[in-house]
Length: 416
Image (cartoon, rainbow, N blue to C red):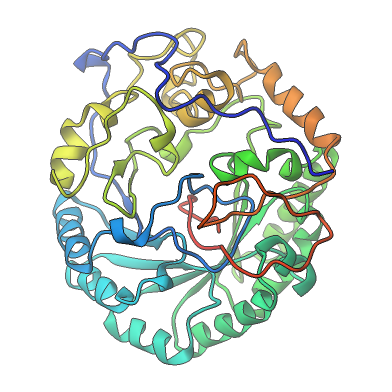
């Protein structure tokens, strides 16, 4: 029997449990420009990763911004003060005009990072991307071995393609980051993932625990790790950091479901990063589109500066004036900025609630219930599907997946 679905997030049309009052201007921190822009170029992807943070309702190619529209967005981003551009998806290489998009970004003066699955870019296309101005490549892997990697990604032969692509990146002289999304079905292989990153010549390794939004939330029971295995992985990461200092930088994005305090999601709502969806919706984070009671502006209708500085959607959870207790009186309120609004909504139905990752939240017990559900799960995946409604499941032992799709980094969604 496949694993039962986690409780569904509240429907988009349902209002928040309590109306959200706008915070007074004095409660807003000084507004700096976003450091990074995450450009989700497409939701198309050849992999089917069950931890993908893309929404269950994936956007079709006909709605995607054109290369020229992305070029205007990049010029506005540079004028706003953005320094880093992360080209993500889905799989960015599914765009036939990716070279033109990269060239637009280069002309705008942005540092470009391509977040890719690496399974559909050959040496000639990589050379064309480098010639267009690509600065950096971030390659995601599912596991250090082919059998596990291909099973998780839902693409037979995908792991071998990733390894070949990593070598092409280094031969092209581009810096390489390896990204591994961690969960219960690959967590024990952290030492081998670190060894693989070294073997591939990566300068940086990002070990990012699954963030439970989109397809990842649907697969939560199959992905949540036990505390003991998490502690063993943390010890391995700490030892590797000490042993490899100066050879490999290792970043870790900690999990929330074993936490006592929340982290500042994306550096805080509307504080450090702007996300633009394939169809142009501007979001404070890649999962925010699920929140009810918001009208997220579109870059086809407004400039990035107007969106960043004046949008109700971006200002809604900035500062501390919106916070309920115990957040409002907490001495960490300007460190974690209330935690993750999307996680609060997914678990409680109220985006303004205290993030249940905080032990002071009245909803903290929901995390323990989710961990208990995961402990009883058989680990079956609901694989990401582009062309059909979610619902079909594939047993853990299946290896006949034939089409497909992702996760990634600032750390947000990107190719898997």
